[in-house]
Structures are given as C-alpha cells and as structure tokens.
Image (cartoon, rainbow, N blue to C red):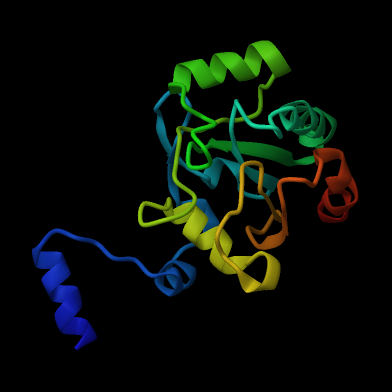
Length: 183
C-alpha cells in the first residue's frame, strides 16, 4: 500500500520525504543550501569543521545573540569552527526582510562575517531537509523535534555528527566548553 501511495505522489509531482529517509540516506555535508547571495552549494565546504547551525532572525528578542555568535566564530575559526546562520521568518514574522536586507543588517549592526544562507523553514510541511535531519538526529525537550523559536542551535562535530541542541535562551558564550571539547 505504501508503495502505491508513493507512486501516486510521484505521478502527481509531489515528493514526500520522511525524517527516517533523510536520516538513512544523507550525510550532513550533502544537503543543498543557498548562500545569502543566492549561490547554490552544500555543507561540504565545512567538512572536518565543528559547526554551529542556528536559525536566526533580525527582529527578535534574541537578535542580540548575533554579537555572541560572531565572537565565537572569531575566537575559534582558526581552530576549525564555523557558525552557519539560517534566517527563518516562521516565528511571528521576525525575519521579514530580503536576503540583501538581512545581510546588511547583520554586517552593520553586529559585524557578522560568518556564513549566512537564504531564508528557510525549520518547521512544517516546507521544512528544509537540513532541518528535518538536524531535528531527527537531536530532538529537543521531551523528544519534541519542532523548533520552538529563533536562535535554536545545533552543534555538529568535525565528522558531521549532531552532538548537541541548545534552545534560544542559551547564550552563545555558554557553548564555549562544548565547542572546546569538539575542537
């Protein structure tokens, strides 16, 4: 029955990807993403680096965390650490701007020069496959996979394994001990 349903979806041009399929078939480095300037890429350039993947927003009570994220990036980048920012407008429209506006805001207000990407969804039917993967690898409180708010952080080791998940209220400087362990 499942195969018949899958065939019908394919015929209708609908692709359904389960978290289990993403888990089994993907390495974190294979996910396709677009840089903030629209260039298609994957996470392969960050192979063998410790990554902190964060859903970010410019008009959020946690937006000030950009400064802390930038400080972490500057402190550890020479040792193989990178922050990857994925803007998301799913939480009370707190990231309404265009990619150009987001990039400018981050540079002017926080001196951000860590990699930023185009806006994505982190929950719902249009969840970016990277976030399907991250959430399946490291569920949140009480096993919930949904992202609760902006500035949820996933720490990924240099082998591509998701090691920790931190909520919005965890300040970037609180992650230093965990980052040090992975470097």
